[in-house]
Image 1 (cartoon, rainbow, N blue to C red):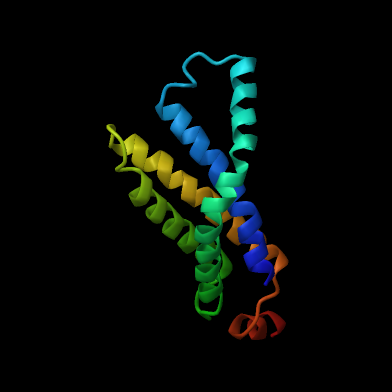
Image 2: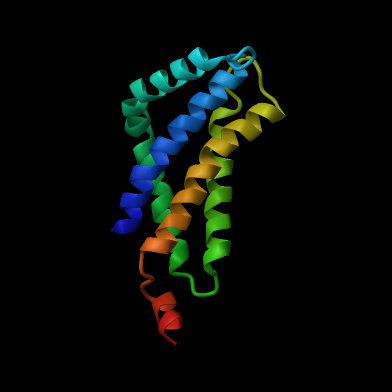
Length: 143
């Protein structure tokens, strides 16, 4: 249960922040940046935080379920599990978001892929630190 709480709390927050950064970067917002522009960015981020959780909670919980399933596979260790979850998050968000809009290319693919990669890797790593293994991996940890 802790795994789902970690993914649900961390994933939408970090994903929303990165999605806002990616869209603002692609729109050219960061070309001439000063302190007021950075302040506006964080004001918009906190105003849109409720929507990040509204639309990001279900994908975050889906990633938690994938992480939970992979956790029960005996031959997959913690670092490989984190990489697998990160790759799934990257691929899912890259193909979901990168083909939208007038511009579609490698920059959009990478930026939107990072929106899914970073929260998935961070949440999976935190879940591995705070969640006790159950099933086959619990037997290996005690042996």
